Length: 331
Image 1 (tube, rainbow, N blue to C red):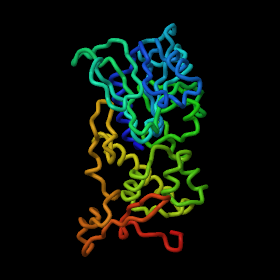
Image 2 (image 1 turned 180 degrees about the horizontal axis):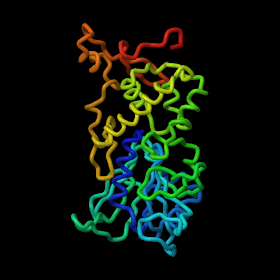
Image 3 (image 1 turned 90 degrees about the horizontal axis):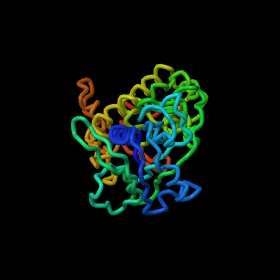
């Protein structure tokens, strides 16, 4: 499944190409991709037809488009208190879902599942914008559905967006904020972390504690912060936790600059371009290779090789020298 930087790349692409446009037509080519919309295809299309996209918002790996009904006010593409936003279109990318903007009449993708035809719009520098938003999904683990919005618990915007409102889809309301969210509270995160009785990597993967950090970026952040994945959460000092959150934020920010991490050829951003951050990884997938930090340290005679260990039915990568294992399960 794409991690936070991949989903943020998609969000930014959609904000550029789709924000403020009206959905003129809905074409469902495979109903399995809207199975999460319990009221069926007719209701799905009825909610989208004529609706205007007010924003593109993300919390963790959750992505949604708040919609304004055709008869609602407000400036095009601007979410405001004067514009009621009863529903949102949620996109679950799954393992192979792609949201692509394409010109009308361009060849259909082999695994095209849903096509939304958008109102005409132009970019001052490039001219007319592509007319279609396509959901393509080979494995059909992802999907689209329309859902209700509820107020956020803290009164802050639901997630990272262009002009976000303090609203969030019901299905995402239990998800914690992620490190790239301006409303992320380190104090709240640290208080909850210290109450956990688990290993730090397990805690990082807990989307109810901190969202958007998957297996790849957890390993990278732990490597950057020099913390072993089994470090007990109740031994984490404030400075350690802050260093780890900062490392998570830095790793994901750098991945965003590179366009996301693409280990699966099926992952592409909204225009179909893969990311290349995997070329800059320091830990994940580098089993048996020298630790780049240890190899560059003149005080260390030799270097350490990145190790791979089984963790929660997947792999965890770390350096045995700069990420020593806690003794007897304690630090």
